Length: 259
Image (cartoon, rainbow, N blue to C red; front, side, top):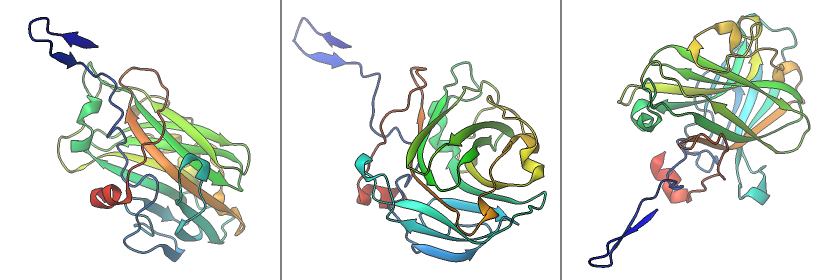
């Protein structure tokens, strides 16, 4: 909306749909890998390759995790994070898990207005390619208030595909305005019975372990299995449309600085 001052001719623009700086994820296109581009024999917790992209694992097989040049190039991507199973586990321990993980500080989430009557939904979009089709789960964990929201997404083919999940607004529990961990996003790749026997919580509620990864595939069941991810974007849904915008590509310099 543009307002014109009839006295001096100046204009004021009220911009309500600013598309810059909308992605809350740093290094979502996997451009930056300052620690190194590959880690082999990986089975634990840490940052094996791309900056800000964490892996959580226990009893979930052994992996080579790397920055890959395999990417949906027609959408402007040149890199991805790749999970390559090197030691399979076909019979999972109840507490087995493997997740691709991203953690966001509370001071970067204040625009969500969580815990207030003006709380906003969050739209998560990402690109995945894998040879292991089936049901996968992605979760959002409010670490400040121990609240959980989970959704399933179905991989139907072995191509690159874009997936979108809308985490509904939550009027319970605000995010801390500090550099502490407030919101975690986790993509489930391996889930033992502790995590996969419940049902999805499609709205934020009390944290229930069994509801985190219902009926999730076991990506660790064969050394032939690979899983790639790139183009991760998390944005505030100011309009309530539930529609993800196109990925916000940033320069390597900008992304490196943020990392």
